[in-house]
Length: 202
Image (cartoon, rainbow, N blue to C red; front, side, top):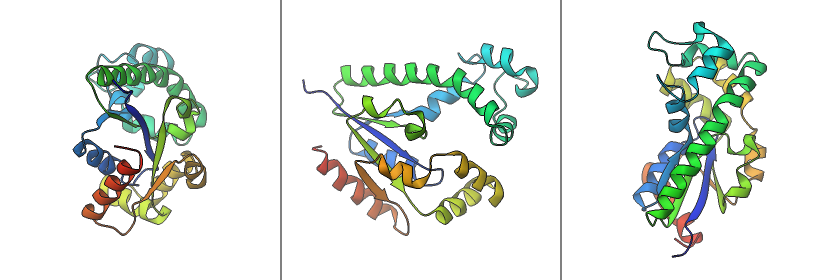
């Protein structure tokens, strides 16, 4: 059986990456969602919670014992050391969970495994473990407008999140293919995904 294509999918906040991921699934790809796995590690009883409690104390936990994501978001985007400490706890656990999910998909016969990893470029470790990288791109202003509308965040907060992520130029340098998701509808977006899948031999 030929090895599954391991496709890294990334893009800045508000780029439409999650929508693109659903189109890959519609083409038969298996999706490995790093954000969902990260949320599982920081949920009540999650694998990261004992060390998060030890490192940050009970003030950053909800009443149910999960990570209070809103409090952590506010801290992490104003203090890089907080973000680094959180990532040092969560990222290794998520990395293991991602690899387990990918191996299971390949054993099940998947032809393509899409790794939806928002911090793919920032982490520095993923490129060597993937066959191809697809970057979903759009203008910074489009990112801001989408996230303000979707999450109800003020412009300054969205800009802070964008500033904390890899720059647009850095993401584009890491790409084997770029999907420019700006000013197009869902049907056209799906067509672009199909074209890229064909280019990659799927």
